[in-house]
Image 1 (cartoon, helix red, strand yellow):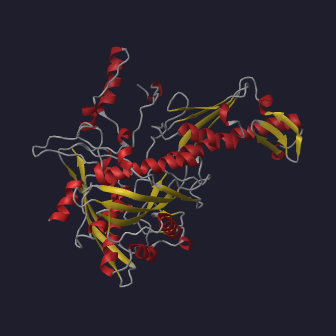
Image 2: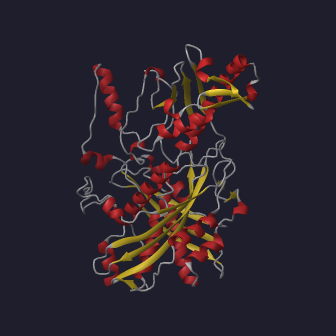
Image 3: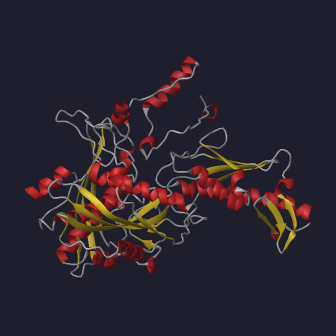
Amino acid sequence: LKEGSVRVVAEDVGGGFGAKGSPFAEEVLTALVAWRLKKPAQWVASRSEDGATTAQAHGSIIEVEVASDRDGKLRGLRGKLLHDLGAYAGSGAGQPDIIVSHMLSAYVLPAMDIESQLVYTNTVPSGFIRGGGRPLGNYAMERVMDRLARALQIEPAELRRRNLVQPEQIPFTTGYPAGRQGLVYDSGDYPRLLELALQKLGEVSVDGEKDGRLVGMGIACCVESTGFGRGEPARLRVNKDGSAELFVGSTPQGQGHQTMAAQVAAARLGWPFEKISVTVGDTSHVPFALLTAGSRSAIQVGNATSKAATALRKQLLERAGEVLEADAADLLMEDGVISVRGTPTKRVPATQVVPDGGLEVLEKFDPKRGTAYSSGCHAAIVAVDPETGQVEVLRYVIAHDTGKPINELMIEGQMHGGYAHGLGYALFEAALYDPDGNFRSASFLDYTIVSTGEVGAEPLLVHIETPTDANPEGFKGAGESGTIPVPAAISNAVEDALRKRKPDAVIDHLPITSDRIVEILGS
């Protein structure tokens, strides 16, 4: 079959978090069965089948050592990364570069030497799960920063202050090889994020014990690459009855593409939000588009929508200029009404200049430099029960910069959900195998995921906005910055707590289970 002969309609498949972004053989075989039988075909995996075949994440061993001068200024980082691909070459092979590049975190790091080794094992294939390797690289750097602070007898926050990229250094060329220009941080105010996180955390004592529990504090900074990949298409149509139809290619799994895209279209077109319908993931309406992953949709879909809305607005204003006998440059369109600038009484409903067959444009956002960098600083206070090993997060703060917000409530949701996901990485989630190599985590009876009971205290959010010129709208991604620093911040806090009882306690493995904590304190 020719590509144009195949129509793909991406239905709502629920949460994905990266696991559904990889192609699976069954998907292709199901299409082949339908084509040969000339009948509809459906493939449904059981929960255990899904758990044993869908991409897992984060099967890595990282060893790093850091160098600094006596004042704590970083001089370099070196180490090794052993990354488990699982039994097949899925998307996990693309993770090492993401892991290593995010070891830079938010710091000025003059030198880096990391050796990466990819290995096949008889385990579930690895892939890009929320963070896509970013939490691993961030974990390595933020954990070693705390070790360095302890060795130099400098407060962890102060050590970070001395090494953060300063606002006046932005755009900051990191020196990491990536593309023609290398990896360049386009925006951010990292010192401000650190101070805001500490201020929001408040004056909470972490000395000694609380109700017999050990209390500790941890912080972790992060920088996240967002908006990867080639451009996205957007088709926008307005009809004579006042309705507008927007078609985009990238398909959501709960992120809210429809709301986000409709808001951008309404703002740039000057059309009532409630009259805009959004259709996603149907190749009969738009050309090929990429997946929803890597915190790319706000940048790619948002800018494609903006471009289409701007083009359609231009057509409407030109047509209205003839009716109002005014230059199109002197016209305004707000809430579906076109008026002459400075003469608001001279106006006409936009539908009056829409032809009977409607007006339609198809645009594609194809950025020369698609990546924009979000950033953040997380701070945590935890209490650890030395008898049971149970960890409770008493207070958690997320200070984040995800650029110009499209929908603040959706960003809050991304941060809250991202935190819960990161908490799972830190304390609960693990793909386990028995001594014979049999997979033991194929169902929710054997695999612990975070529920509302485990999340506990709701994270406190602080949002700042720094401009980026990486895309015309100044958008940045927000899908993973809520997750990336959580494992490091929680680990730093737990280790700080355990050292109140045992000064040489070390957290060097995720997840931090209760059994592991009891073992550390009891050994």
